[in-house]
Length: 173
Figure (cartoon, rainbow, N blue to C red):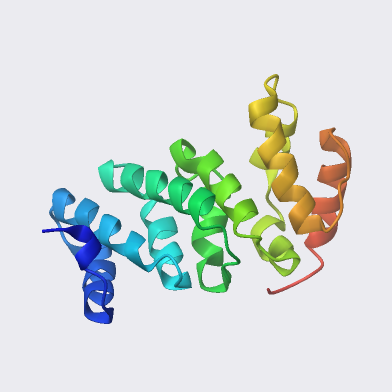
């Protein structure tokens, strides 16, 4: 079937169900591709982000689609329903998709209000990446942290660690 033609609401609902529930990996990968037809919908981004929690070909497909969508169709996404999943990815649940998560959140302009829910009593992997030897690892993490903080606290981990420590006092998105 031509995936581009699967573009009505029923197709989206079915693809979202399949990507999370079908036992056949090929079906789930195809469903992820169908969801890309609905890039204007936050729920598409949510389903693909959730799929990245899994260490299989579906997670890899979702990773590739999110990279492509965030570059081709950059837009604001309200990530509120996905805080738990995003927090897990940022804390290293699936390291394979860590940097994609960081970049997608930045490119979809995640709101500052998510700093506490995503980083409070955590964020150590992000801070550790600020000390990485390669700029390609430091830069996207700093961009995300700057977005969440609303200001750039600099290139060194110390200021960011201090800022994250203050977040444990704040609650909710």
